[in-house]
Image (cartoon, rainbow, N blue to C red):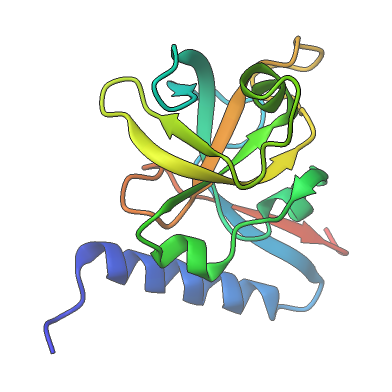
Length: 166
């Protein structure tokens, strides 16, 4: 067998780190992300296949991030390990983006094109409530999350913990 790629090694390193952190006394939840709420964040595009692109903010979310941050699902589900290794890109969108792209219908299971410079197809697996992305009290803007461990996901790694102790 060939040696693991850099992406595979990174995926394994963070998977082990999260499991070890979850096992520590007082740690209730742990997840990875490419950015924390209220941090400067990247912009990209989202559109219906063949449609006009909509500017959206974007970040990468590890499994369990939404639960850890208290961001509730309106429809669908969180990312799973299968989304991380699948050949099809999965995304979770916020309510603002879902309403812009599908104003009269469901969005979970629908195809969307993500990316301004190198558009690629994706499937919506979940819709989460709008939350503060750049600033408290901001008008909710379209936002989508990619699974953290995909090779094209965020470059910064942030580990988010919920603990029962200081």
